[in-house]
Image (cartoon, rainbow, N blue to C red; front, side, top):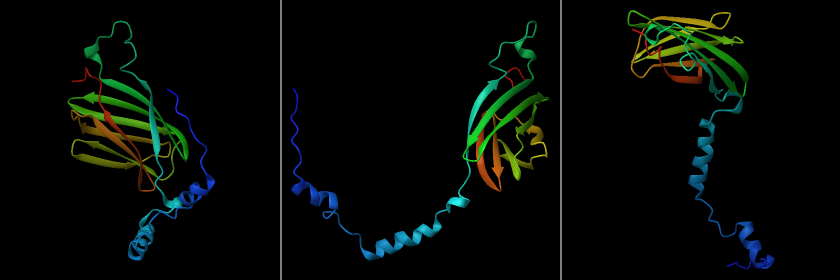
Length: 171
């Protein structure tokens, strides 16, 4: 059943559009709201953020002929990070040796003033990126939940990639 619509009477609609039916907040509440604005970050100092997209995962690629799954001790990941400040790629290599994990990576193009932090369980390690945008963390514990890598630009968190795990056949 079709419902008929009537044209709105401009005389009756005008007061509703003007907002005369809205209640003005108390002056004290208005002053508090204005004061809170000073706590908001200014646009030029707002946090820069990236969205990370996984482009390649060596665990998803088929194994070369003659290689068994239990022999895998390396995993390669390639991410594309895109944000308001541009885009870059992150190439990661995760190696497992003697129950410890080694995480090597490189941001291309390199990001000036950037650092990375890696969280393995409760342990967190930080390191500034090299001139070529590279970093290396050795002897990390291999938590069940995987590693978390944080990109920091000018002291602010710009991207977090969680659940980075070594190859499943790693010892």
